[in-house]
Image (cartoon, rainbow, N blue to C red; front, side, top):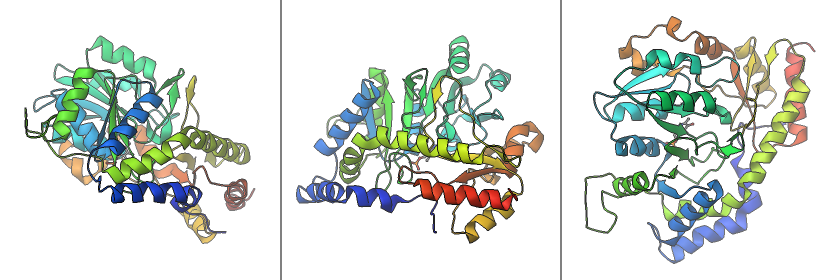
Length: 368
Ligand SMILES: *Cc1c(COP(=O)(O)O)cnc(C)c1O
């Protein structure tokens, strides 16, 4: 059996006529930039989230940058984010001119450790970017307590947490704005780069839209200098085909995760992911902690099973952040996770047989 880490072809096969039609329509109408395909997707995405505004952008990195820039975050400011994430969560902070302040994760849930946030807050701190990494929602109650107490903007990086929930409220709707990526491998994926911002703040929405469209809401009426960050109409048309399926796909990811957990329970060498109380994980990634990871990965690969590590090196330990002068002791938890985390294949189309095959080989590897 061959089990790829993600199988985007399986999803395409199921939706081929609709997707092909949507692409053909955009081309036939030569409606490549802007227009109804983009505005329809923005409206449907905002409606599904129950928010007032959705601004489509070119990718999930731009969305973070645009939000911060339009909140007025600039040189001299500091923004807090988490030590384990994709680099977009921190590089966009630096891009505004502000300084990145990293916080370690909690061992149980792999998300920002709320007990360590206040230690890095000072008079320069303007915002916290929380990352609902792997699809697990951060402890929003504690985080909202902190952002209110210190009057900080809360920005949610939801690139891995489409339709994750905390107390029956979607991740991305707790802070001033939610940032989404539709990179092909994300839970809702385009056929290229795409991203979006959601917010209930009308003024921020208007500013973000303007900034992402060269500073002009009406052609040639540039009120500010901006950037060019638009979602292509082809991507919007494809995402509109996929959007009606996202809640079903999310449910299927949860079923796959539950099955993994049932089959891998009681193996001493394997620590299964925990789900935060009162929350719903969206399992962008199914991440376990294991002993002898390199050997296990190699063994699984020999059996045709692809696995990955998210991420091999925590952000503060990357060459890009050497200038911050951090040592491993500054982030003891991500230091532990770095050597133990392993992402197993997960997607809505993953079959019971495939999960069985993967789990059986993990058991065989540990002599169970
Ligand atoms: C994928 C991802 C991003 C960036 O999204 P792009 O669309 O690739 O720019 C940002 N943050 C996290 C946590 C991600 O996983």
